[in-house]
Image (tube, rainbow, N blue to C red):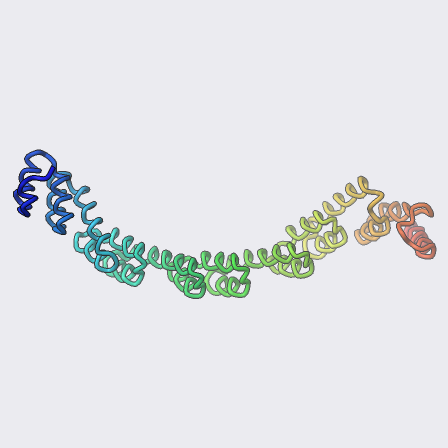
Length: 291
C-alpha cells in the first residue's frame, strides 16, 4: 500500500515508513518509478545488500541502453558487466574500448563476439578480421568451410593456422566425393596426405583397381590388406566381379598363382561379355604366366 507521503510526493517520508515496516523492496520500487535511481540503489543496498543494489544498477543501465548504460555500469565498478552489456547492445566499439582500457584480458572475447555477430549478418570478410584479432582463426576457417568457400578457407589457414590446411583439403575432397568427382577428390585427399581415407572410400565404392593403385603408389603398407579385401569380395561376388580385372590386379601385385586362377575363371559359358578373340588372348596370357 502507498503511504501518505508517497501520494503527496514526499518520497523520503514514504521511504521512512516502508523501512520501518521492513518493506525495502516497495521503497526501492517507489524510487525507480519516480526515476530516482540513486535513491533506489541506496535503499536496495541498505535493505537487501550489495547484490540487490547491483540488480538495480543493471535495471537502470538497461533503461538507459547503449553506451550510456555501459558507462553507468563502469561508474559503479561493474566493468565486466558493462562490457557484456555493451556487447548485448551491439555497441562493440565501446565494449572494445572499455575492455582495452579497464580489462585487457577481455579484449579477445569482445573481438570474438563481434566476429560471431558479423558472421550471423553474413558479413564474412569483416567477421574473419575479428576472428583473427580474437586469435580464433579456426573459427574463420570453419565459417568459410560452412559456406563451401574453399579459397578463403585455405587463405586463412595458410596465413594463420597451417595445421588446418589438411582439414580444408579433406573438406574439399569430401565435397567432391559427394558429387562423385573421384579424380578431383583424389587430388585433394592425396594433397592432404590422407591416402588411407581415399583407399577406404574406393573400397567402399568397390573401386578395387583405384584402391590398389593408390595403395601401391602412396601407401604400400595398405596394399596387402586391399588385395585381401578384394579377394574376399570376389569370393562372395563371383558372378558380379570380372575375373579379368581381378587377374590384372593380382598380376600387378606379383601374385602369379592368384592371377592365373582369376583369368582361368573365364570360360566359354562365363565370358563376362568378352569376345572369343579376347578370351583366347586372356587364356594365352594366363598360360604364359605359369612358365
